[in-house]
Length: 129
Image 1 (cartoon, rainbow, N blue to C red):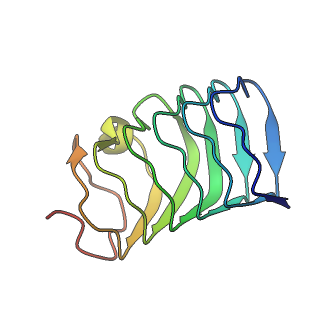
Image 2: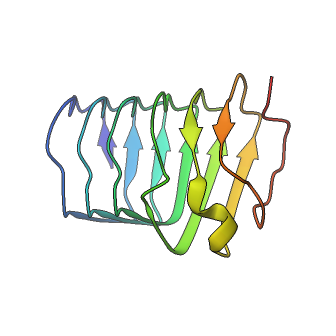
């Protein structure tokens, strides 16, 4: 478990995170290119302006997180599973969803603007304002 860690702006590329819990951590403007997240949870974290190109997200939950200008368009779609709960995420992009069988859920997420086609995706709450 990582709590309150200020990783803002750091290069966290090509790392593996397994069964990790991140609480109140600041990942703003971090680079996660090529990293793997499996069964991880982010709670009350800031990931705004982070780069997630070619990242793998398998069983990852974002709970009450800030995800401003994060583009999941270039994330690895293989076995992708994402859940967003009560997140602030304007300009969140999912362009690959139409091509990949994906499991992603949105729970009580407000003021969101999504680009791309969202199908094959379990939408569990209203997400457009």
